[in-house]
Image (tube, rainbow, N blue to C red; front, side, top):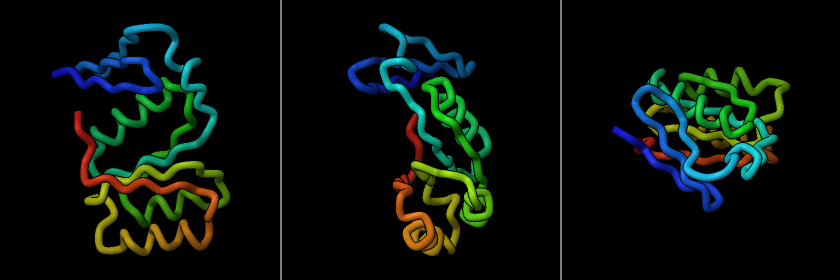
Length: 117
């Protein structure tokens, strides 16, 4: 299985060994990720793959297995983007989004139904 992602006009392919192959140029330099992204996913493998990909793109990454853990880890840390898989948020998912909105309004929030590899 190979997942291909298009980022800023560059193609990135990831195989099941979690190796990342750049189809053209230096993707990390092209994207220039300097932000901190928090990945929330109850599936450790999915969370790890996404975190690894983001780190390879130059982003600092924090990982959480649940909405409660995400809120706890956010603490005094700067989080530029919260990427959360809906199923990982549990019954308090709406509360987590509200918490970030009230306490960390500078953080952008993206909740996905699932990651598609």
